[in-house]
Image (cartoon, rainbow, N blue to C red; front, side):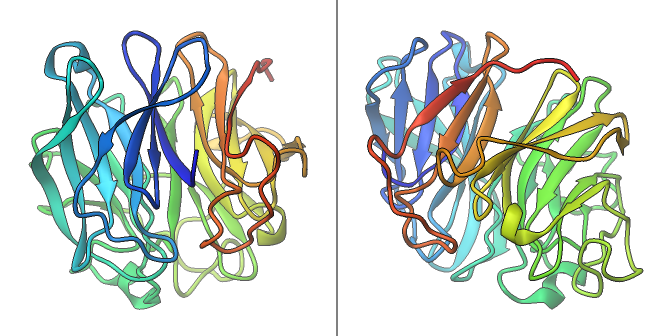
Length: 318
């Protein structure tokens, strides 16, 4: 695979993977093996960090064949609904759910998940303009929350898709069993963050980075960017599992509700290179997507034999 980015599972336990640079969506058999091409998402604009980013399958995929995708465009970024053919060998863009997200060379965010509330949660970056994160008129530097038809849920903090603000570049979103929402965020030079999300809250950027500053909600964990540059996040067996790009490892953060319950624990440091995405598979294992062929992004490493790959990892409680 070349520059894989997003990963989502289908009802038959196979998985779809998005490739950032090619705009392709690939299908991986449930038991693993060689990927097959589903199709190419049109009108994808590739930049240093932009392209085809996060994907997530509809809860009703078996009947509606819908997958949602975060797409970087030439003029703006958007979230689209795709229809996957019954034979998994073609796709079409059904509709644009959300646009008006400022594009740039860097800081696209791009992670999208469907929460336990049935809504789409979307992480955006500040488009390399830090002031966007604090601007209520901008969708950048935010966590966005919309219904699957693109409408704004009535219990959003306001009348816009904005759920929370003051984020630099959100790369991962996950939910605990009690519905607690967590997000990973790339810092600048001082601290990367793991946050618990609260409706209407401000998370401090650009005035505060991690624990360096006094504005906004405090993170539940911080890690230096050299050791993290966090990307995808998954919750399994009492912990968040966080892929690290620059840090080239898998971080485990034990959590309970709205707090971390222990310090972060590093796994696989340097063994597989950059880790882009982490998802819980239907069998409870973690599928981990490496990101070593993505030479256009920062903190690169030479591809290893077999890159890029998906790793399957069993996890223990605690």
